[in-house]
Amino acid sequence: MELTPKAQAVELIRQSQNVLILTHRDPDGDALGSLLALRTVLQRLGKNVDALFFGQVPTSMSFLPGYAEVKEKTITPSNDLIITIDSRNTGEDLKLGYKKIVDEHRIQIVITPPKGALMPEDVKVERSIPKYDAVITLDCSTFELLGPIYTEFPDLFFETPTVSIDHHVTNSYPAKVNWVDMTATSTAEMLVALIEALGRGENLLDEEVATCLLTGLITDTGSFQNMSTTPKSLTVAAQLVAAGAKHQEIIEHISSKSLTTLKLWGRALAKIQANTDLRYIWTELTTSDFADLDLPDGDDGSLIDELLKSATNVDFVFILKEKEGGVRGSMRSVAKDFDVARLAAIFGGGGHKAAAGFRVEGELESVRGEILTKIEAALQAAPVLVTPIITPTS
Ligand SMILES: [Mn+2]
Image (cartoon, rainbow, N blue to C red; front, side, top):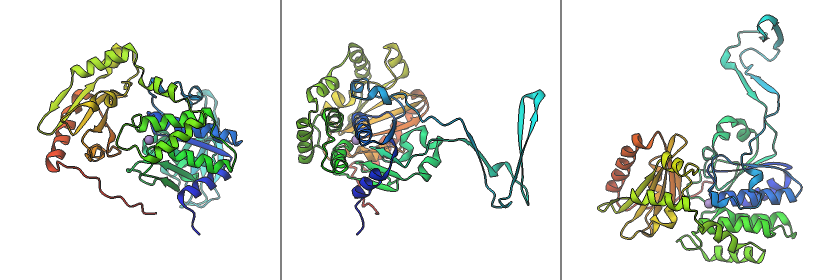
């Protein structure tokens, strides 16, 4: 009998001793909570775990247990340099030698093929990276969204068994094992079932793990207020609270706003623009808005969910934020059934029907016009955007 993707994920994780856990760039509460929870659980099961992410975390999430240990963590390549030679055209009996050019402090490595000629493009030079038995990506619909690790260490993803655990409709089934549950409100919700299976009767859901997971459920459902909230998510939340999740503390951290955040909101609100015909409002924040207030780029304290989404008489809202040489767009639907993931897809982004995002390279000043034009064109071409039914192929 063929195993379900969930059972395959459980099996692979059980058999793996050295595990790398990753999540999408600029993790939100679900991504970070899931990363920290799984890290703790696998460590308790005696595994060697590396867990890391790229980009920034909202400051409101830094209270999560274990955060200090994953922030700014990177993969540490060993001191070795690996030279890989494609010997298909020359045969494998290469002769290796080296020449010291002492005066110039240089060493030349000489590779002589048994036949034919070696070309520079036959040679790949890279740093050696640690060996993992499994790479687990959480809350991440494509490997590109992981950030630079995917482009810097591509072999990691081809040579190691990969598991994608995700709840996004836009998941591209990038891994060897893809456990994608589009009915789950959050990756954290899925992990509760995974952790139960890994525990084999042993309770691995303690206060710390439950707090991380409940944070994921709370942030991805907008504190159980948005349309994606399901009866199951409420049951799972109750289970996490019973396991000791500190729900009061989570809510306090998520909803408390510093004076600087409020000042930033003031700037964003002053810049709100409306398109009444096409029924949306939007605003923007530049690098200097963040810098003036000494806030990390892009950290707006979930302005879009807490303020913009409460707008009436609009179908959707979005915010454009300058970040790391590009512009990050965050979109939320206000009207039921309006699909913002389809709009984000115009720019190569993705997400859910009710919440989606994208990134465009360049300064806001130079890309703003094009972004607005494309959104308007899409709305005029198809005013009601409906998500196609996606059938997983395997
Ligand atoms: Mn999520």
